[in-house]
Amino acid sequence: MRTAARPRNASRIGLLVNQVADLRYEQLVAWFAARIDGSLAWETVSADASRRRYFRARQGERSWIAVDAPPEYENVEAFVRIAGLLHAAGLNAPEVLDHDATHGFMCLSDLGDRTYLSVLDEDNADALFGAAIGALLDWQGASRPGVLPDYDRATFAREMGLFKQWYIAGELEHELSMRDERAIDAAFDFILDRLEAQPPVYVHRDYMLRNLMICHPLPGVLDFQDARYGPATYDVASLFRDAFISWPANRVDGWIRHYWDGAIGRELPVANDWSVFCEDIALTGAQRHLKILGLFVRIARRDGKPQYAADLDRFRNYLRPVVTSFDELAPLAPFIEASAS
Image (spheres, rainbow, N blue to C red):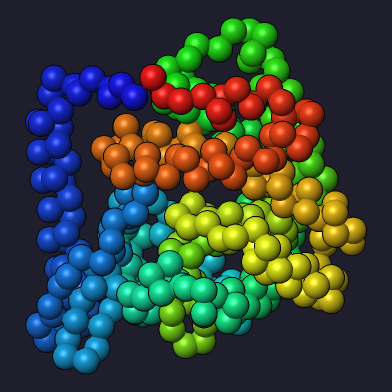
């Protein structure tokens, strides 16, 4: 794989970015100090694929999560509102103790630092996934129209466009012919038609293992600020076709069946036919994985986070059986099988 040329002024740009980040950190610390009496010990928690940064502020046995969410990139008000929806549905999301939407700062309750991803193993997987499925059913069961933005066809199409823009053009360095472009767009339309046919529910949008926490009650739920109103199978595909870990097919099928039984029992809007439901998950997952192939290349190259490129093979592996199972997706197969030059 060829590496994109580094801009001549990249070191200067990096210095300016670091200076801005350091200034925002100082402002966040000062904002916290005005709200919490006494000295605080600070530590970095994480910086994710977005522009957000998370810190833990400790004071003796107490701790809080401080969030730096630059307002030009992040929507603090959406985070606060969706946290309220999760709480109303009975889920364990962080409590927003204070926030400043103008400056992009938040003070959250601390759900700890043990993610599902860090502790999940063959012995505890059934219990942990069972809790995650129960929480997901509660979240979907609380759905109401007109509360969250629609996860609509245009958004899904725009997301899959990353596959062409960043994965095919950037990672594979392939220029599409007009014929290939039309064929790929037809495959995308097939996926979009199936997504659009599914009745909508609340969608977390990143309901995966590193956003689920080990705390009481299970699971703690993070990274929900981009929630939408869309297909019920989306969060199921996110949970069981995870970006960072894969499981044997027979176990995954059992967990998905557990979800489906629960969804049918609660009269959630999923297909009543098991085979149709499995097709819906496969095609919803395909949309997500096509998006992520492009997104992870963009994050690796444009945003300077090369570790994201390490998981591209996982998504190709998720997509291979799907594109070979549907004739309508055949135009995608050569690009899933291709290797970067």
